[in-house]
Image (cartoon, rainbow over all chains, first blue to last red; front, side, top):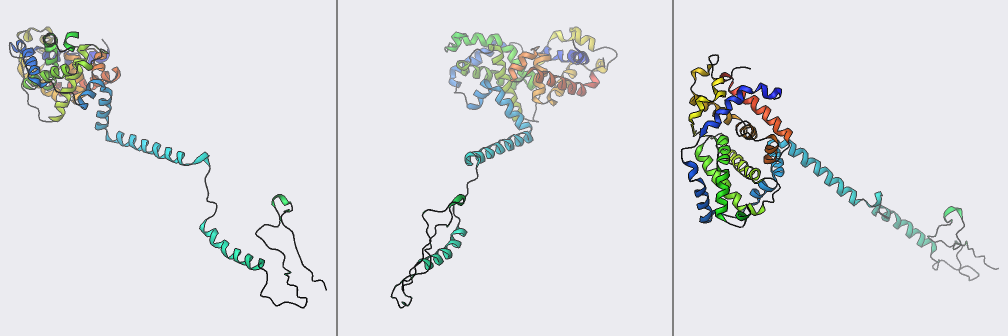
Length: 169
Length: 184
């Protein structure tokens, strides 16, 4: 007998009184008959989900009871699961850990339009310009294109040539 | 058992007879009401019969039956919260000669003024003040003599939880019955 049991020795003696409480005489003589009669009368209905849980998964019922008794615990668990869920979605939505950026934004497009127009004006042959004496129509402007003068790493771009025309007089 | 699983009601009748007293007593001690205990005990046996096919034998039939009865009673008590109506059974003739009760009722305790019937009423009132989980462990262990391990299996919790509940339940019960229990 441990110390805890010793402390409650008198209580346990008192509780023995419960063992002397008996149902009315002859009660158990007909108890099983009543049960069988009810079964034969067709009271055997299919188990509900709740009843099945009580019998087959009492741990789940205990957990639900715990949540019922401590709503704060339920809130904490729900919050934790929500955070995990959102975290999971964020991780899935981000490919290879890189942040994707758009190639051309609308502001970039708007800025590029006037530049392109200027370049087009420069590159167009000046057909409307008055001809000089030689009758040669030429432009002294170098050929302009969108091609950058220098390619990457400081190498000369092979596709680009500076051109000038000298009138042969 | 095997015959009962195949729908043999006569075989099931034998099982009912074997366990009816213990199941009834457990429910009665939890409800302190004979009529409720009668209804719940019958319903427990009916439900057990319905669920007999799902009984896989992981625990003993008795433990499994206890689980059904205890869960049914706890659910019943929850729906009737604070609406207890005691309908106590009579004490048998042996109560007055029980050595433990005789030892408890001595000249040094106010119990000498209280008859056993009054003590029975106070004891049941005190039990009804406990929460359902606490009352269940006290009834199963201290009244019915079920082991901690079996109670853990019945309630679907671990043995430590059973011991802890039992300690706090006894402590609370002792507080409610302090004037009837002489200190050790």
